[in-house]
Structures are given as structure tokens and as C-alpha cells.
Amino acid sequence: MLSKLLSFFVVLAIPANNLGYCIDLNDPERHLLESELKLAKKPGLYFILKLKDKRIYLKARGNLLREWEISKARYWGNLVDVKPISLTEKMTLLSPKRERIDPGENDKNKKYELKALELDDMPSSYTLSLAEGIFLSVRPEAKGWTSIFPLTLSALKRHTLFPLKTVWFSVKKKPFTSIEIVLNDKKESQALYWAFSGGTECIIF
Amino acid sequence: MPKKKSFVITSIALGALLLIFISLEIAGHLIAFQSSSQGKSISVEKNPGQVGGRATSLKNHDLRSRIANLSPRELYIVIDTANNILYLKKGQQIIRKCAISCGSGNILSEPGGRRKWIFDTPKGEFFVKSKIKDPYWIKPDWAFIEEGKDVPKDARDRVEADYLGEYALGFGDGYFIHGTLYTRLLGRNVTHGCVRMGDEDLRELYMSASIGTKIFIF
Image (cartoon, one colour):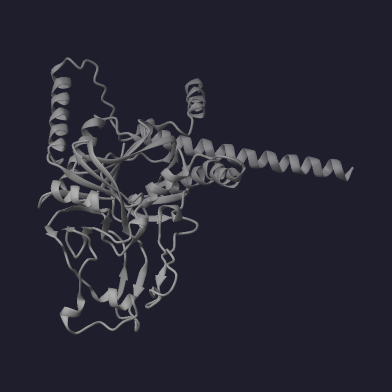
């Protein structure tokens, strides 16, 4: 009885951002390197999310192309195996819209107007849906009073939606993992959205 | 009296809500705790000096070397399409960093709706397939459609000189790294998928890169 009570309090004391669960403890380094070798042998870009180091690496052929610093990371749900997982969908409230060119509109006599889909048009808060029921929610560090709405939304997700989903998927015996990543600023978050494209593979460590 | 009653009801409602929140949190933690302790064996390397520890360390070292060996040893090109920057690199050392223009991401549909083009710079791994001095632009169909003109039947009507700058480096599927007349737009996403560069930077890139030089675009 006492041990049950004790374990209950231990569970209570574990914060949501304890990332120790994410990692397969059976020689995780080797799992990571083996998985990376698989990806590095193939042409194409891949991501490594090193949650404990608070870093996201974009690589190709084992070569580091870009790196993001994670300011905060939390997770809910099942363990994530250290293996390549592909991106299935980028989900956001307002997806960036591509401009349509009307044939003949770029008449040389008309004043030139730049129409393009650029980094500033990318969302800064979004969810990346990965295979095997893994969801990566990304948002920038909240700054100023305008961040009240996204902060409230994030808190609601953290304290209601994610725990509820964890329970629901567990009852349904389906895999579910939700990882929330907070990046240092808006531009970094937008650049990550830009860099992730459909089918991109990543390893979560 | 009704004020007191409503206060009690509100307090009960808030308390119930708080209880639901806490229950959910605890349930979530318990499930995570259970899943973390089930089916995963935890092996702790107690003494790295022992044979097992050394073998693991050697294996990891071997894996690291195999990954590192896949990286290009010679010069390679990295293109950041979000920030419109091209890096000429060797290892992790940046040899040259230049402002470029990448694809606009715009969509052009042929009147009648038969064909559609999305003007993105492709992402992934490529290599320099061709190096051309004083290139001519063989205008593709979309260039005429965009201008609202008929696509010519005679191939000679597609040729345009002095449009791509002094040099062009092809990396497949009609995509080139080339010069531009619109240098004020360097740093913006304005192209039809090709990569535009300033004259000086292009000359340097042309001289440094050879056929087979790797290009990583993200």
C-alpha cells in the first residue's frame, strides 16, 4: 500500500517535459547512429531531433546543413523508437497560399509587382504529423502581449488535449505521441516549416 | 442569498474542472510511465572499460566514421531557399556565401487547364551536370504562356541570348544556377525554379565547381 502510494507521488512529481521516456535506453547512441547511417546512404535531406540536447539538425549524407536550437520541449504519450520516421502532413490553422499567375499579367508596360511565397508567409505555429501517430507541435517563444492567445491555446493543449489524447489512444490501444517544441524566435520556426517537406524522414532521439 | 448560491455553484464547477484537469494529467503520466517501463530493457554500461563497453564504443566509432565517409570530401554547394543564400563549402568551412534568388512558389496554369507549373526550386541532393559559358536560354512553353503569347512552332524562336548571364551550371530537369539582369531582386524568391546569382559570385562558383560537385538544396 505504502509503495503504491509512493509510486503515485513519484508519478505526480514527474513533469510533462521529462524527455527521458522518449529514448530507448538499450544503447540509444548505437540505435541513433545505425538509423542515421540508413538515411545518410540515401539521397535526400533528413532531420535529427535531439530532444535531450535541445537541437534539431537538418542533414544530407551525414553532412550538417542547418541547425535549430530548441528553447523548450515536452512530450506526451508512447515511447518513440529511434528509427527513421517520415513526415505525412504539415497542419496549421492558416496554410500559406501560393499566388496564381494570370497569363499576360507581367506585361512590360505594367509596373512590376513582386508576388511570391516567401519565408515571412510561412506559419510560425503548426503541427507536423509523422508516421506511427507522432505529432510534433512547433511554436516560437512567446513575446509581448500579442502572444496571449497562442500561449493560452498552448496551455489548453498541454493540460487538456494532450493528456486526454494520451488516455484516449491508450484505451483504443493505438500509438500516440505528442511532442511540443518551442523555438527561440518566429523566423526559426518559419524556417523549420519551410525546410520540412512531405516525405522528409526524421529521427527523434 | 442568490449571490451566495451562485458563488457556491461557481466554486463547485471550478473545482470539478480542476479535478478533471488533474485527473487527465495524472492518467497521461501514468500511461507514459507504464509504457516507458514495459517492453524496454534498460542496460546500463556500468564499467566502460570492460570488453562489452569497449565493443560498443568501437561499434559506435565505426558507425560515426561510416556516416562521415558519406559526406563530400571536395567542395560542395548548399542552397538555403528560404533565406536565398548559397554557400560554397568544404567540410564545415564556408568558402563563399552569396545572395541568390530562388523559386517564387507561384502557380501558372495554361489557359484551357491542360498543364500547370509550380515555380519551386527543387529540394534535395543534386550535382552539377553541365557547365556552360555564355549560355543561351531556350525558352520553355511556360515562358510564352506566362507572357500571354502563343508557343512558337519554330525552335529558333525560343532562343534568347544575354538573359542567363555569363555562366550557367545545370543540375538536372532544366534547372540551372545562372546569372541575372535583375540583381536588385537577389535575396528574394522570384525565379521560376532556377537559382539566380550576381555576376561576381557566379564567376567564382563557375571556376570552383566542377562536373559532379554536390548540391544540397533545402
